[in-house]
Length: 225
Length: 234
Image 1: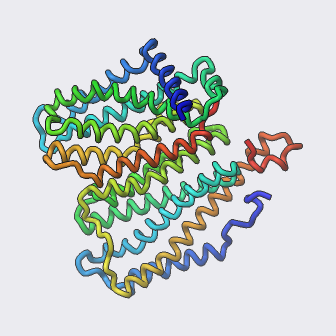
Image 2 (image 1 turned 180 degrees about the vertical axis):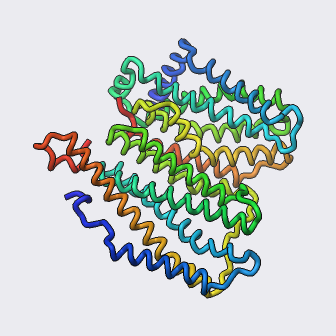
Image 3 (image 1 turned 90 degrees about the vertical axis):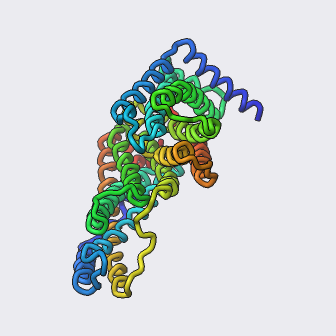
């Protein structure tokens, strides 16, 4: 077991090191996320304090687009210099590759969220003070499911040299339950002042479990040098 | 022996029975079933709406089973079956959405509300339309089969989650409808031709897909290796 963990960490470290040295993805994605927040904020009239305005929805749009870009880039790294062939030749389970890519994607999306969320909080005076930990918990659990689906589809799209637009097309409809549940949950907590609903949170957890398990099983079939 | 060789195509008698079923069902709905008290004649859309919705789910289930089958056995005909199912699922889901919207306009006074079942049907439509888009954008036969199978499995597992999450929205859609006995008989009569149509369309589409793939294989593969090509080895 510890060997598997070591292999996963090795691959994650490799991906993060590449990202730290090339700085290709994160800068681009963070700015894109900020732009989306600003454009939507202006478009929806956040400055006029429109009734029913939902900062969480705006944040989610930013997470979704930024996330898709992250997933795409993490897999695209493997396309250069025949890295994917080398990765597939390495004596490791395909599931380990999936887990490593998932963790890398989670790290990147967390980094994006770390910049985009405060921007949303600032721009829309979105009050998180009621329970910031609950916000982190709900968004975190949703992100795991989102990244699980995204990592699987990104590897599919990347290994078949398809156009980028297709990835968003695949991920968005599948991730809709996450968006619906977490915006409902966050609106209920931060706008209506209600508590955390365990049953609703259960849907998010079920999403995570189902799609991590499925991806783990079918990941064998999708990777190709 | 491939599935293409089996006589699967529904014959004239089948389509005659389906058409006859539709005529009988329409006549029952128009002339025999009582008009609903509050909604009026627009409620009669229901007889088409519900059977179509249930057949949509059956078609989605077929896509899922065929996709699992493909990943399991790597036989091309599973992939053709999944594609046929998805085509019909999207068609039927469109009918569900359109009939539902017309009915909503008549009963609630607006074309669309974000109530759970409407949202659910819309997301379902998106999931399977994207499936068709994915298929259309991949050239390689094997890659297309694998990728669409993976997507179809994820999409189908997503369906109950979409349903659960959509339930968080305020609902005005009836969960169960109290039906007069005559209405129930009419509804049952509608199920027959709609299901026949669904199965018939899937069979036609499946046969067409089989022919297209074997024609392509004949073009790609040298004549000597033709008999072995139909198995769909990787």
